[in-house]
Image 1: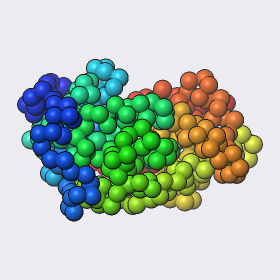
Image 2 (image 1 turned 90 degrees about the horizontal axis):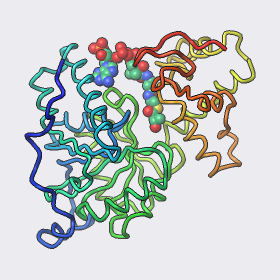
Image 3 (image 1 turned 90 degrees about the vertical axis):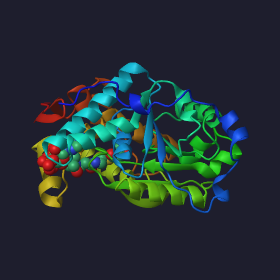
Image 4 (image 1 turned 45 degrees about the vertical axis):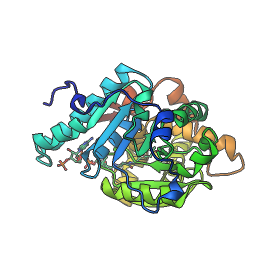
Amino acid sequence: MLRITEVGRSTLRSTPKKYGSFHLLTRNLSASDESRRSIHTVGTIGQGLMGHGITQIAASSPHISSVIAYDPSGQAALEAGKSRILKSLDKMMQREKITSDDAEGVLGKIVFTDDIAALGNIEGPDIVIEAIIEDLGIKQKLYGELDGICPPTTIFASNTSSLSVESMSTAVSDSRKENFVGLHFFNPVQLMKLVEVIRAPASGDAAVDAVMQFCEDVGRKAVQCKDTPGFVVNRLLVPAVVQAMEMLDREDVLGGVPDIDACMQLGAGHPMGPFHLADYIGLDTTKFILDGWIESYPDNPSFTMPACLVKKVKSGHLGRKSGQGFYHWDGDKRGDPVKG
Ligand code: 3HC
């Protein structure tokens, strides 16, 4: 087992310099000034379920030299993110997909920090990928702060699953808007090979091209999407999960949760049935996505709220992360369906 030590300490750079001095002392480039941009240094914000995976795959790429892994929730959140990365690397070592030297190499590129100023380091980062709570107000506040910290060339990319990228970008200066995109990864990030690249109306070609290249550099297939609710995957997946939950509410299927899941696994070849998947994603996350859609698009018949989902979230049964949802969970291991 890899130990949690002073991960990334060797790559910790000197005191970060704020954007102001960077701007005066070096270049004053905007995205459109550069015909070819490439991403070598990455900042990640939020080291939770998605963020730790993004940190890990970025640090695993030979094209990326360093990752500043920041979490606004402080040390406990950073420790949890580090542990998840160590567990994942350990799993890969046990399966002989990587060597211990590879794992040390990945860890050596990551600087974990709870100091947002680290993202204003003079050497970059070329991109900041945000994966914090899906709350527009909280995200806008963060982006407003980052706008004053990061160099003007840093691309801001949100891993939002359902919020509008354009509405997030209202928090930054006009000159930054061309450097603002969505970059939506899938759970578990270490295994899922797709990234949706979301182009808001103001996103510039240079920034979009750079993140497309970044996706390739971290071994992902990138698909460009417009800034529409749920983009492609969630727009298809979440309504399917809702339909399954509404079947449960109506008691359409005698065998309930496990039988509906079996139908989609064995009849449609999905790796997980809809209840398994909803537990895996998090029932609060699923409800949050729906709440936002229902509020913004009240006339869209695909966006409805199943009663069983509301009940689960109200009672704190959020799926894998809380140990119980539609199934019992022991850490990452799914158990039996919850009765009743
Ligand atoms: N890090 C590294 N390796 C890992 C790992 C991790 N975190 N988790 C699992 N692995 C490895 C395992 O060790 C195993 O290796 P092996 O093949 O050498 O034995 C391999 O990956 C497969 O793992 P498992 O055997 O545990 O699991 P499965 O074969 O059942 O696959 C799965 C797991 C890929 C998660 C598959 O069940 C799946 O594709 N499920 C659907 C997931 C999905 O739909 N995700 C999208 C959700 S929507 C979303 O994220 C959007 C958001 O906005 C809500």
